[in-house]
Length: 221
Image 1 (cartoon, helix red, strand yellow):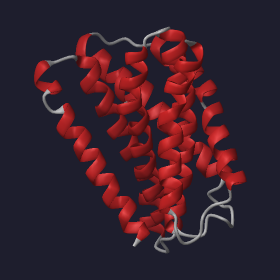
Image 2 (cartoon, rainbow, N blue to C red; image 1 turned 90 degrees about the vertical axis):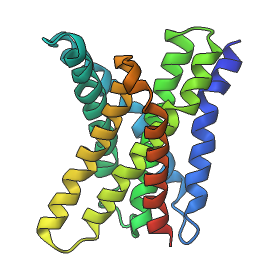
Image 3 (cartoon, rainbow, N blue to C red; image 1 turned 90 degrees about the horizontal axis):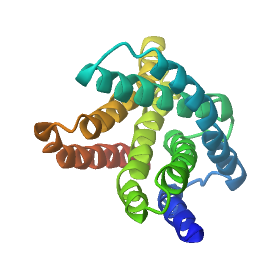
């Protein structure tokens, strides 16, 4: 059973990682650096858990405000902040980050590293033996992290390769703000369990895919 749960937990990451890697047809990134960013993304779970516990302990809200606080601040902002920090401190100024697509590739690998550990924690430890949780997270949560990573990398690359100081600063901020909002909204819709919100979840997921595939294609072509 444990072996099956592990396979269910890591298969989405492997599939999505290979997919992103293969999109870089011109100048593929070295596997050693991708693996380092992936592992740093995985290790970012540690500070995320610590900060999230502190923030949850000071949650003074109730009802939907409490859910919004958890979704947008505790989950969205904190998780995207640390995943982004991996890219900024691990590869942003590296000479191998030499084209716009690289920002997306490295951000996705950081996100997938985080998502892998998070998925294992949910599938194996939190919901022990529940294959459906693993399958559902493999279809929604792990791809969600990848899509937020695409948005993050898109704006990081725009910031890196923009000469105008004001625009550079703007894109740099957007590389955190936009993924955090997208992530928070994703979580809020699911956590709030409000029927009218649930009706927009599938359209929202479709929007995430369409919007981020456009961003990806913009740097591929």
